[in-house]
Length: 524
Image (cartoon, rainbow, N blue to C red; front, side, top):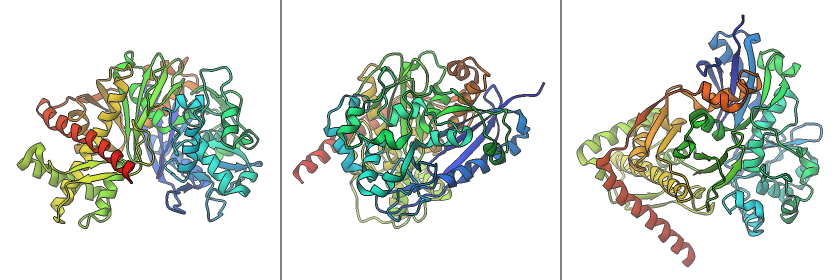
């Protein structure tokens, strides 16, 4: 009897990754291809959705070749992607969201902050839907981006006939289905999955989007994650190098796939938090009842697991901030993997001499791209206190170290907000690019006081998406069962008790810096 394998696709900010898994969650083959991003103006970022699809197809073909699995042995596929917004015409053609008018740039990237003013307008409505986004609308969510396009690119808005979160666009390309995932709509489109009337047209009317449903081709009800959306289309079969025996599962936003991959299937979910950390960082905590917290997105019902509520927080720039520090400093240059390694090695040498007090008077507030959580202030800015005239390579290392400390303290800040609202989180499951940074992995344990678990199976986003594909293919009766069966073990790191005093002190300074920055904003 032929084995049945699963294909998972993870589309991040800079690349598309594909993995082939067996039904127990073991990764057999992986491949990655870059995707293009256009920075058309300050705060603007755009993708080409056809370029993304091409990268997806190439990575799937390469991953299958690496795994040795036959095309007709792949029984399920699903997609996770960043919460970027794809604009298509009424016939499915690309529609530009760029100031330059090029139709290929049809996707507003998740990190695009062009709609800051529109996000503030959404918040000012005080509408009930805001209770499920932490009380404040973020420019990284869909509604303000749609408002911006309608207001600033009216010709684009007039031509738009289909709107997708990127993961839903990919399942549409694969299956032909216009279904939308309960994850994407609930987390980014103010869809209230827990209510019978899930859409609130009065909210959209209040922000000038009364006609949104005429331009979006949205369903009345979303599809639960892992829903079988049908087989691959003939065109997708040819492009992906698979067969029509492969079923397509309703997908998720990338961070939600990571949450499935590291905490899905755990019985005591209230104690565990997923930290999906790369360019930015996303924290996700699940519970059996809704737990609203100011500045924390959600609670979202059924996103991604049926019957559970999810609260989401995060930091808009973490890996990107460390890259920025390197570029910014005169001794930095281009932030390659080798540059990060050289800096990290030198920090370890300096710490062997000075210990955790290294650069102890240098303090960083890491909100260089706003504060997503728990302050929910997209206008927040970064702060550095304690600079001198030292411009040496060692001064770069000290600044890098203290920036890494600030990133970890930001996670502690989010944890405090969650635990103050009913959670009892004591374990962080970390996945993403930060697992390759030994400083951050050490700091996540020592600065938060939590046990840190690093998944041993590799890419948790791909694993979570493979769980979804397994559900759609019928390997398991439901998504929860797939998570339990396919979950991989991890490596634990306990906090260092000797570091607690140092980081408790740093955290007090961190909170005081937030207060002082807010006071300066008030004065100016």
